[in-house]
Structure formats: structure tokens, C-alpha cells
Amino acid sequence: MSENKILLNSVPIEEFKESIESIENAAASRINATPENADHGLAQLVLTLIELIRKLVEKQAIRRVEGGSLSDEEIERLGETLMKLETKMEELKQIFNLSDEDLNINLGPLGSLM
Amino acid sequence: MDKIIYAVTGNNCSQEELNSLVKGISGISGSSLYALSFKNISITVSDFSSSKFVVDKEMAIDFARIIEQLSQKLTLLPVRFGTFLKSDEDILKLLTDHYDSFYNNLIKVWDKDEFGLKVIWDYAKGSEKIKEESEKEVVKSDTYFSKNTVHTNYLLEKIKKHKLEDALLRHVEKLIEEISGFLAEINPECKFKKMVSNSLILDGVFLIEKDKKDEFIQAIGALKQQHNDLHLLLTGPWPPYSFVEIDQSF
Amino acid sequence: MQENVIDQSKDITILEILDRVLNKGVVITGDIVISVANIDLVYLGLKLILTSVETMQQRHLSVVKPNHPQK
Image (cartoon, rainbow over all chains, first blue to last red):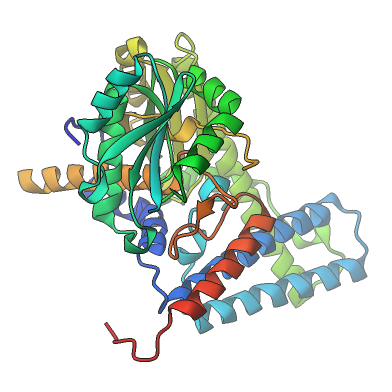
């Protein structure tokens, strides 16, 4: 690039490194994909989508709980289900060796949804 | 031979001028650029075997270089890196089938540049006050639950977490309103991503008329003065990567 | 120290560029597009995501060769 694109930068180096990790991960996930690690890329994609859905479901569920219209039994079942989903998600992340950052890849036109 | 496409351009020049402009820019990995036109819009193309194509940093940056060079002389809609079509016929069909979409989008970005603004904060420091406020709204178990179980405690923690997230989002939305205030005179089209991470609280892009560039930069400078608690990264001018909206029925 | 600042500026610019060319711009999908193995697995809409996944799995099977040397 012939001209300098940075017009204003007041970000200290450390802070900047942390906060752009997500962009690096997104770029890396597209740049480093090979047939060999395609499985990993696939797992990352699938788990990202599942995690997104889980978080949306969690949000909705909590809204309903806050709304106060649920019975004790419903609340108990909801709590148990959400807990199990989260535990399962943690297990899957361990199995596929994926961190929280890995699951926040930029989903192209959908943007980074989390 | 496969074709890689770079950008959809609006031609404010003759076909000859376009051809010589495009010939003067080298494509990725030394390939030659050419332009296929329909009425007053074109697509910039080069021959490139998709099997030779590797998504690596150097090639992506080279691609951006070409977009940048084209945008010095032409209004354009950048195409996403790594888009291959099979033939000139397919490319022309793309142009003719979607002429209206491309044309309207080119009008939208005519004489405008994209700028990016990222707002970063120290999460611990920045969110401290917001956390306090959100915890003042004491979340007690008996507000929501008549029983006290492992599961209701789990839900209680989630409620607290979501209240904090909502409070953070509202804080960022206030910041967006403030930014819009500083840019009221310019009134640009803009898009925002909120709370991209705990530290990257806002990622915004702006479509600014070329002759309003200095005014815009000044306005962001004024914004920065108001916020010693925030770190800003302003970049640009960029070709309008973030402002291409095409009816996706290919 | 001065060098760090310059390197950081370069890095920042590169990341901004990569973010734009990889994640933004006109997205063209469908029959006319040749899918490249390691590009976007995600397109607009779940329907397109599933189609890409299928294409990728097929590609994975056809690319793996018997005596493929390990990197």
C-alpha cells in the first residue's frame, strides 16, 4: 500500500494485540485450511454454529425466566437443560481442542455474530 | 482457464481508456488484467488457474493492492478475494443479469471512501462502573425462584451475566449515538459491530464523501478528546469493501 | 522503540487489509462460481452453508492421495 492508512492510533501495543486476535483467527482459519486440517476447520465451523445457537437459546430462556411466567417445574427443567448443554459444549471444545476465541470466527457476510 | 475477478467498476471513461488503465496494473502472481464490459460497468478479470490458487497472506495483500490501484481511477465494488468463474461468458452473464444491482450500488459509493473506526478499552477498568451499576440491581434468588436448587443457582448466575451484557451493550449504543452526533453535519452511512470482544467494544465503518474527508477526521479527533478512557484506531481511506450490498440471487 | 511503532503500523495495516479482502466485498455464489478448497465455508443462509460443507467433504475425499507426503 503506497499511502499510510492509519489516520489516528491511540491504542497501546498490548491492548491492540489482544483485541485483534479475533481477526487473526478469522484470517488464519481461511488461510491455513488444507485437506489435512479440513476436519478441524469443519469441527470449528460446526461448533461455532452450535455455540451461537446455544447462546441465543440461553438468552431467550433467561428472558423467559426473568419474565416470571414459568412454573417451578418449567424453571427446574430449563435450568437443568441449559446446564447440560453448556457442559456438553465444554466437552466438545476439549475434544476438538478449540478455545472460546476459535468459536468466534467471523462468519463472512453474517458478520461475527457473538 | 479459470478466471479470478477483482472488482465491479463504473466506467466514467471510454473502453480504450479502461483497457489501457487495466493493462497498466499487474494481476496476482504476475497475471494480466483485462476488463469485460456491459453498458457502463465492467468487471476486472485475470486468467488464473484455481488449482494453483492458495489462500496465503501475500496473495491476499497483492489482491488488495490491485483493488487499491483500480480505485485510484475508477469507482468500484471490490469482490471478495478468491472468487473464480469459469469463463468470460459466465462473467458477462453475471454483469448483464445483475446490472441494476451493480449500477445502483456503484451510484451509492460514487465519490466516497470507506473509513474504519475501532474503539478499544481496558475491559477491567472500563466495565468497572457498569458492573457496579448492574450489580446494584440486586439479583436475589427469591425474586425469580421459589425454590433454591443447583439449577436455579445456575440460572441466577446467567441472569446476572445477561444483565451485565445488556448494560455493556447499552453503553456502546450510547457511544454510537455520540459518534452520530459528532458526524451530524456529514451524516454518512455507517455500520457498527458492538462488543466484538471484551476489549474491542465497537467496530464501525463509514462511507464518507471524498471532499468531506478532513471534516470527518476532525470530528473523530474531537470525539477522542471527549474520551480519554477509550483507545481509537481510525484507518482509511479504503475502497468501499463494507458497503457492497448485492441481491444474492446468483 | 521507534521500530516497534513502525512494525505495529505495518501489522495493523495488514490486518485491516486482510479483514477487508477476506471477509468483505461482493460475495458471488452459486453454479457459476468455482469453489476453491480452502475458501469460505460459510455463505449467506444455512442452506448455502450445508451446500458448501458437502462440496468440501467431496473435495476432501478427492484430494487425499495414497502416498501423500507429510509436511
